[in-house]
Length: 253
Image (cartoon, rainbow, N blue to C red):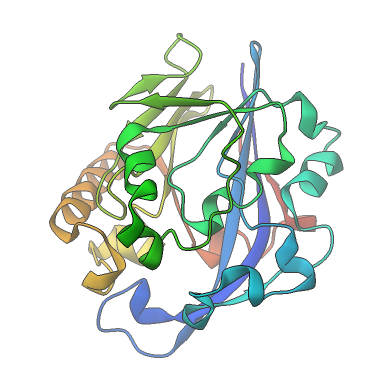
C-alpha cells in the first residue's frame, strides 16, 4: 500500500504564453513536490524552490529572474512541508527529479541523505555551458549528492508501483512519474504537461519554452492517451489543483 502526499512549495507569476502558446496576460502557478511512502521507504518527486528564495526572491534566480516572479513564504520550503506531516527530511533516501530547472530541484539539498535519480541525458544537458546560460543558469542542486543516472524507464522499488517514465521535450532528459495505488494509476507529469488546458486541448507553450518542441508535442499526446484510459494526470503547474490545499498539503492517495 502506498500513501501519496502533495505539497505546494511556493508560487510563481509569469507570462501565460510560456505555458500556453498564443495566450496573453499573466498567470500565478504553484510549484509542487510529491511524497510517496512505500513499505520499502519514502521518496520525493521534485523538490520545488530553493529555500533562499524566501528571503530574497530575485538574486538567487539571476540571470533568469526577469522571466518569473517567485512568491514563497516561510514554511513553504520542502523540509518544512515534510515536517508538517511528521516526516524527517533526513529519512528520505531517494529524490527523483523530473528535470533540473530551478523550480523542480531547488530543495534537493534539504534531503541530505537522498540519492538523486534522473535521466542521464538530463544530467548531460545540464552540464552544457550553453544550456546553463538558458535553462540551467541557476544550479539549485547539490553536486555532492550521489546520483543514479538512468536511461529510459526505471522501476524505483522493483515492484512496478513507482516508475520513472521518459517524457522528453520540455528538457532533453525530462521524466514523469507513474504511480500505481489502490485507487488507480497517477501520473505526475511535471513540465511535460503544464496545465489542465494543456492536457484537454493538447495546447503547448511558446515553442521557445521547450528544448525540443516536436518531442514535447509527442509527449503531450502520449499523456493525453493515458488520461483517456483513466490515469489521473497531475499537470506540473495547475493552480486549480492546489488552490484549496489546506496548509499547502493534499493527501492524493
